[in-house]
Length: 341
Image 1 (spheres, rainbow, N blue to C red):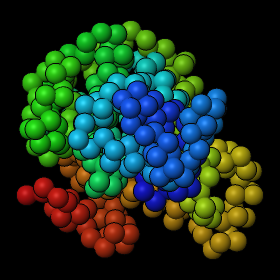
Image 2: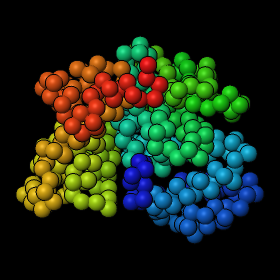
Image 3: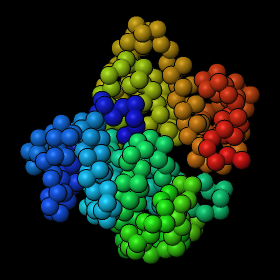
Image 4: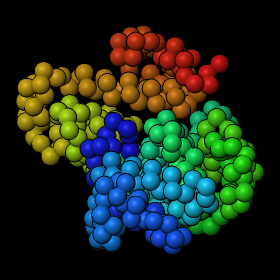
């Protein structure tokens, strides 16, 4: 989930139940963690109960603080999450026809419990893999999040592969002091890396997966996108439209398709936008620029190729639109990112 929306969404109680069970199992005061998050302990035991994004964040902070001297419990937490706890997006990943399809959807994590975000490793690097970013993770949760999410993601890759995933290397955005916690990873480990990455041979990308099911994959993916589209934001219709457009990439939806995903008629959506002095084409442009920023951040694709991918007919139009939204050209944006040379 993103920082700008965590206060406005509802999440399954699975995550707080996992952390609460670990606290109880190790003799720590789980009730104190529930109180710190403004929750009743009963919420963890109630089937189908939900918590707000703020409550999830509060519980994570309490859990991480209470276990700060026992990071092995962060690993234990990660081992209890799995693809099923990721709901529709996890099921879509599991049923993906191949790793390339799986990597195409890893960025759709808006409704999940974690603040970490994911993308595929740029193909231009000569490697294939998955990359995790901590831009959205609060500073006091970064080490906890890496330990937990690396454990979850590594085991998820094994699940998707149907056995030990053939990783060639894993790079971790953690100090060397954490090395002893990751003995379950059967690949060379690098610590203090710029980002956390799982790497494997590019030729694996198109290999059929054991749980591949095209029909289920498309069904779960559609549900995940619908859930994102229907995300209850405390904002106007423009935010809803923008979220649908961003979630639909690589497709660029027209107004009737967006209206359908929002449960409205095209006429009703158009009227709602006009009432707020919004133009659909402006929102579509904003969505394209949002996607372009992600590609500039997470890939080494030439700016000209990114321009094509986000739907601009020529590089000049793309650069002008990008600068109008961000205040800088695409090349300047990439140069000013942390770690850019």
